[in-house]
Image (tube, rainbow over all chains, first blue to last red; front, side, top):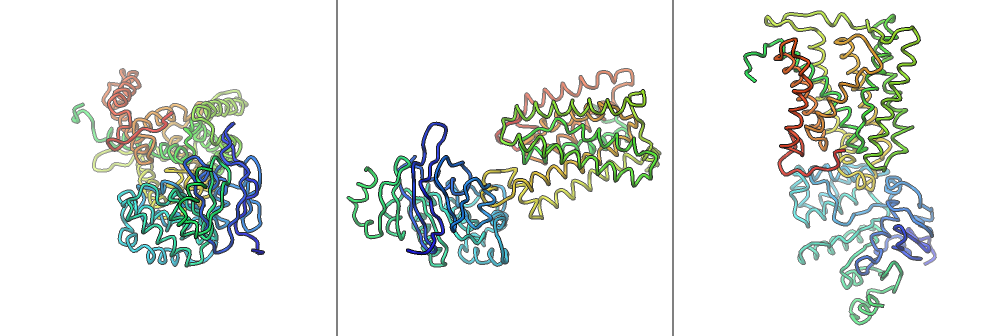
Length: 237
Length: 302
């Protein structure tokens, strides 16, 4: 891997007061990759994504997007530079229509036609097209997750960050979320996926980092998904 | 309150007062929406606009009105840059107290400027002819009353279009609903806040024009009483949503006008007592706001 990573973390440190949430984390995501980031609750996964977005200040280390340091920039500036976050809990605007939620995603778009991006999003998620005039709050949990992902995609991001997209969804719906992630990868979007569903994530991702207590514990390859012992060991290490 | 004692004249005047207060409520509500800041100094924007109208009375009315808009917008922008921006993210209490201080500071500055001619108070003569009455269906209506009602309807209509149909409007609504998520999506905080501050200034300038027709003598405390009443109305209506805040502003203006009309002239001293007793009753019965949807949760209402 000689090319410059699209996202590179170097010894990232994030503290909440006196509590270290992320400790010396280094990782990289290459152009076109789907990379997983797994670990138990409180491991620092979401914090890492929020640090990349500029939503929490970092206390050490570096965050490079396409080789450019982004730490200290405002979240909207980072979003506009081509990094989209699909936040935990979906965070759709419940009283806004589905279409308005998607149009909010266009806020970070740097170039090209927003209307075209909306059409593509509706093709990818036909259920959203049917409900485009309805308030997002009446959608099912799975559809709201589709909306949150679509909202991230219409920004035309170079890098898509997903924070636990399968959280709180029924098993069948979780299947469809992972199918969606595979389709997004096929479109050439680079993805960093934070998940609790370790096995599925390891199987899907090109490479999966295991985080515990804010530290990198292991790096797993897709083949490790079948090796339950190795997974458990990585989690409990 | 039997409606028979309220004549058409009083009703029309009350609607006009409600319209003016509704415009102020929107001005306060827009800034609250994106900054979670109750701008107690809003009345001083009106005051600055009124003084501008007074000091430019010798010019053509169009010039005078243009100067009023320019001064209020410039002052509002300066306050945003110098005071609101550094305070962003502070607790609501800190922000509220700061706007108190700002309000009294601006009043004190106005006093220094005003007293140079040896008297306190400057008359506005620019648009005084709007006090003339026209007869509509046997009811005498002052032109300024028609202006106030028309402005209220037109501005609220334009604002609804702006918020509902434009990208900046969508971004403002998103910022008001969930600023953190809106920023993560690329909504520029400085732009939506700057735009809200600009719109609230435009409304303050309009209010200054209408108010100075009704009460031409501008003093340093100009607009203060109105701001307090409107703030109460906004909280009674429900501060969390722009339309409930606006309705609250209208309602308290309308109620003030009607009660004022019903009370005999020698009893108008009881007006504030009556209005604020009503306010307390409403807040006891509907703490979320008079117009808030049932079951709506109350968020920080300072």
